[in-house]
Image 1: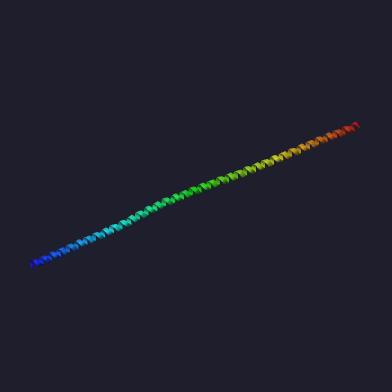
Image 2: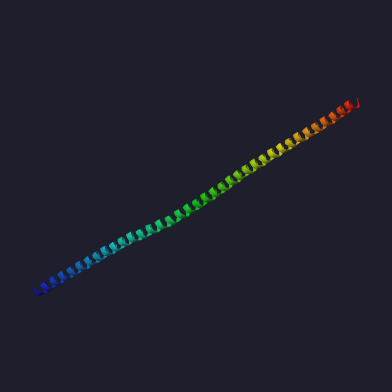
Length: 135
C-alpha cells in the first residue's frame, strides 16, 4: 500500500508541477501579448505624432510658398499699376505742355499778323497822307 500511496503522491506531484508549469507558460504568453499590444499602441502613437508633425511642416512649406507667390504677384501688380499711373501722368503733362506751346505759337502768330497789318496800315496811311500833301 505504501508503494501505491507513494506512486499516487508522485503522480499527483507531477500533475501539479505540470499544471503549474503550463499556467506559468500561459501567464508568460499573456504578459508577452500585453507587452506587444502596448508597444504597438505606443509605436502607433509615435508614428501618428511624427506623421502629424511632418504634415504640419509640409503644410507650412506649401503655405509659405503660396504666401511668397501671392506677395510677388501683388508686388508685380503694384509695380505695373505704378508704371501705368506714372505713364498716364507723364502723357497728360506732355499733352498739357504741347497745348501750351501750340497756344503760345498761335498767340505769337496773331501778334505777328497784327503787327504786320498795323505796319501795312501805317505805310498805306503815310502814302495817302503824302499824296494829299503833294496835291
